[in-house]
Amino acid sequence: MKKLAVFALSAAILLSGCATIVGERSQVVNVESHPTGAKFSIQDETGRVIVTGNTPQNVVLDKSNGHYFGGKKYLITFTKESYQPLTLPVRSSANGWYIGGNLVFGGLIGYLLVDPFNGGMYTLHPKSANAMLTPQAQ
Picture 1 (cartoon, rainbow, N blue to C red):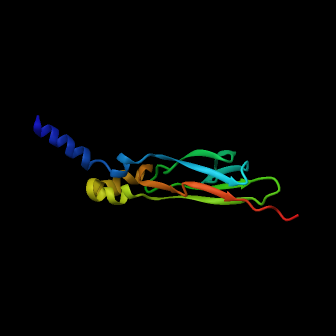
Picture 2 (tube, rainbow, N blue to C red):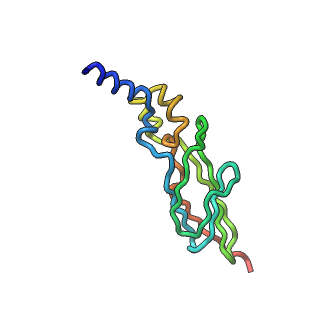
Picture 3 (cartoon, rainbow, N blue to C red):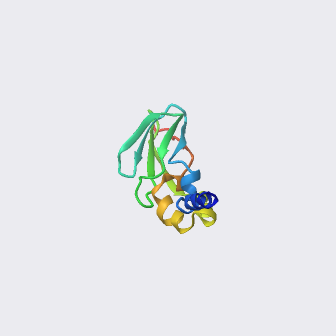
């Protein structure tokens, strides 16, 4: 029985990536503007509009597209009457759990096989997209 418990624990550690265990597949991003009340639309890397709304608002965005090392990229476009449109990028990057956690727990299996398919290895930046809108020239 003791050998079975040790085997099960070892298998769980070896067959998992640290970021997959600790991280989430999606992340809340705060979308704000100055002045408030701007319309926004968020497009992913394929050009598909996935979210529209008005500032301020929190949105939940996927961090991975499910492909091998498939971190997501987004463009947030802000519009408001009498102001110039503004587009801000949101990009994913590897987080500390992927980089450091796999040194301790996941090893090569975590680095190369488990975490690259899961959004848990990524963090979206910026975590708060704040557009400073410029008035249009009269």
